[in-house]
Image 1 (cartoon, one colour):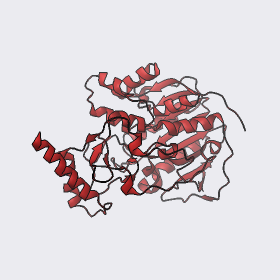
Image 2 (cartoon, one colour; image 1 turned 60 degrees about the vertical axis):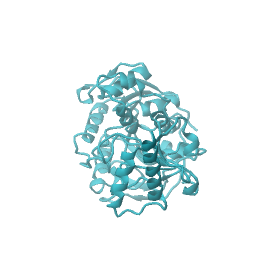
Image 3 (cartoon, one colour; image 1 turned 30 degrees about the horizontal axis):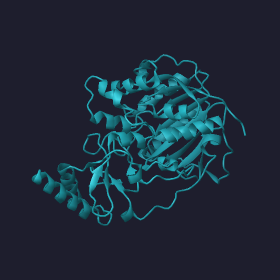
Image 4 (cartoon, helix red, strand yellow; image 1 turned 45 degrees about the vertical axis):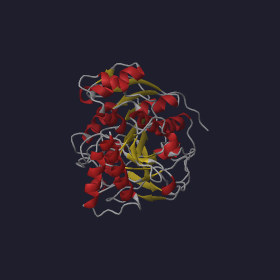
Amino acid sequence: MTQHGSLRVAGLFAGIGGIELGLGHAGHHSTFLCEINPAAQRVLETRFGLEVAGDVRELEELPEVDLVSAGFPCQDLSQAGRTKGISGSQSSLVEHVFRLVVGSGVRWLLLENVPFMLQLERGRAMRYLTDRLSALGYTWAYRIVDARSFGTPQRRQRVILLASREEDPRTVLFADEAGEPEWPDADTVGCGFYWTEGIRGLGWAVDAVPTLKGGSSLGIPSPPAIRLPGEAGIVTPDIRDAERLQGFDPDWTLPALESVGTRKGARWKLVGNAVNVPVAKWVGERLQTPGDALERIEVPVRAEGRWPNAAWGRSGEAYEVDLSPWPVRRPHQHLLEFLNFEPAALSVRAATGFLSRAAKSSLRFPPGLITAIEAHLANVETGVRAA
């Protein structure tokens, strides 16, 4: 098995450094960071000790590095966002990644984004990315990866796309397969959902929170809700536990409060937009020690339509690979045991708003959820009156 050394990393659209921190845990080293958000810049400067470049559109070239990482903006690609597609003003910024790696000696290119882009506009966004990579001489591979694979109770699936002109990315992304485990009875554990939803979606997650998000259908960054088992109520996690759910240390985003005009809610946006650290660490470990790509039945990807969960290609060819979002299966931490900080009770306003939206919805809610929220609302209102 080939053993590779530490890679020098340039992080574009670095956010609060999820990819770069995870790669660092695997032995790689970030030497250059670019991020336009002032609050995120402050976090990066504090945590990585590097001067952070601002607008990727103004970069003329990259320093000499081995890997370029880019969790490029997902607002135009996400189901919760504007869904304008790859040509949207935010997601089209990925073209600057391609501009910067042309003619460079970069060995690896690592991109991350939301799974919805696999189906948006009948797969046009993913086809654009893979066509561009092939045209630049890359062999590419991607896979949807679920953060729960690494033990943290957050159901978060993201597309990890890895490409190289010199090496085979399948030895990194396709060398592991564990499959999804069985989950406990929902009545016995904490279950997460989006209190900001209730009409078109719910985000229900058993023994986990749903994907932490930078925004919501109400247009605000906010924590998910957690239905406690029995009649214990509805709570929302502390921001420090949200950071831990993404693999960061508690208060990782605290430097953001030092930015001019940054409010506490901005920390939720930073955390929700971040790349999960354990996922990036797994990629980094496999970059250090590639494995053998698992033998799987491969069929050509259809010319139009939704892309599969995993695929690879080069020179204009693309092949579907039968792999799950679970490359590994680390010991699962139960959601309520994971939380280290006191959660807050879901507010009267939040609970009332959810119930109002749910009453207009045609969604099928998990048994007992509406009753639990109604009971929680009654208890909170009683407590407010008593106070």
